[in-house]
Image (cartoon, rainbow, N blue to C red; front, side, top):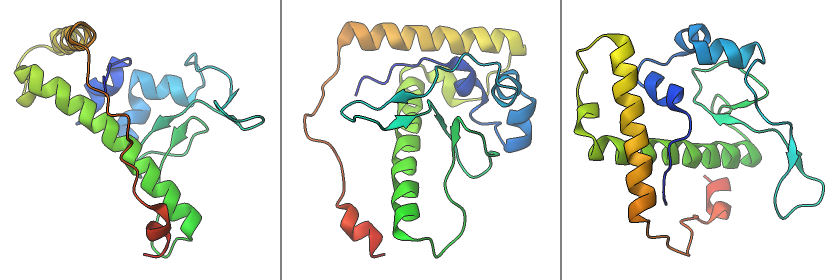
Length: 157
């Protein structure tokens, strides 16, 4: 996959993010006060009437929000909720993989960046811009087969 970085605030917050910290961040405040310019709900591709909101993927540390998907908590979930949690986990792994690709290319992201916060923002944004440039310039190998596991087995666990 090409893994293009589109929202740098998420990346800047990745390692410090917990529900309370996120709610106090600029991005979190804008999300929870509905000030982000998130597109209106739309019909999913290849469906006729399946209207869904645009969402961000998160983990269980985040509070509920119409545009924030987080896993169902607890054990003993029914098969529908287990499948949802599995698919959400795969989406989160995609984001983590994109960050891994970014960090492996730009090694400054492997350690603490000992600079003023504003300059740190600039460094990370520059890494994202350079990452996107290199990924678009070099192209990517896209395997036509998807890595989807047999979901029937998932529901019997």
